[in-house]
Image (cartoon, rainbow, N blue to C red; front, side, top):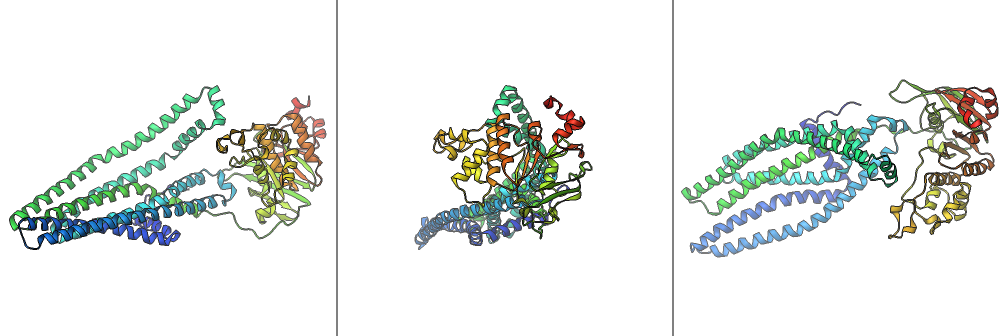
Length: 600
């Protein structure tokens, strides 16, 4: 995946327009109100300044006893006050619309991002470039509504600055031109600064990910025991601090390179503002111009400079995020998993792994090499081998999560790569080494998430927990199955409503979910690694008692392997031995050497 290119000026403004357009599609009425808000906030202050200047002139005339000047002054005061009241009322309406718009945009973009991420082909989750792109896209999505508000603010600044310059042209076109030239450098400097900061952010994404991971570890209560026992807390804090300081130092260095340019631009603006005030003062003295013109020119020049300064800051803040819109678009355009037409409508009588080889994307290393074997319905098959032999990868290929580089997995004559994934997965229950713990849910809810299409009953939940040897744990809890499995989820400070399970108990809960699913094909990848031997024996007794269940097991426990009808021994991605555990033990080959300690 190529490195992101710097946005051209055309791409930059197209990105701004795209954010505005996408936001407008999400909430048209809010977009119209936001646009109106931008214009109103820009125009009404100019009108206020105009009437304030007219009030000053009228008051001066009234002081000089000019007939009717007092009435004019009162009229201008009323008009100025009326505009201020309108602005206050409009501000309340605008604030409400802005909050509503922000919520709608944030929630919609978040849902789109999540939907996209969960629809990618499985191999992409192992691709670092895709993971980096996802992180950049998420970063942009967080700021999507913020950018929409900023774009609205930019419209306000542009309209306000242009309005002020037009207002100055009625006094002196030359003065308006000089002010326009004076305010350009600040915009250019801010855009360059923001782009340098964007390149800095992108170049340090890995270090920033390391820093965030350390912060997450230090704030996870479940890891504190190990961190403190090993005495690594201060070490991790020091590493995080070093990464953070390095990141901040580089960012400050970028700002220091432009600070003198910024100071020069600010001094230039101040001199132009001073010169304009001197000029208008001389005009009033020499040519008897209205006294209110001083206030008018002072406010218009100040407003033009202030609005462009605000625009420059907004461009600076938004430039980095707008640059990330390219990453957001690229992520949203990633190919999703291909839609399949075939369906596996019934439980397969035979599943054949047919000459399957597999290499992970962007690597030339074969993890699986020409694997071939069949599984009959109701058969219990064990896959064994040392760590790194390819067992878990084989399970992922079997599940259809990865497509083989060569060969295929065939269920009753239908290659699963050509069938709809959901039609295959509905026949399978999976308990892998990395199983999900739904911390937001109670124990009972965790169990029912094994099959969301089944009507949940207390008896079905109870049976699943019994088969997983988990009821003894649940019955000791005050709220039983209604207990949350994360202490921070306790209801209204009722500590008894939540608990924290041990590693083995979490695994039993995952097994209960597996039993609740009650699928005809069961895939178990080290399903009882954290469970004691006695409980494991009872669990497998429940498992193997079920008739017509096809079971594929990966385990390092001989007691589990011995229950299989056939065992396949993997070494370096190849099947090197097969047979029953008793037959393989008698051979005294690779299987025997691996389990020799347990056999004796």
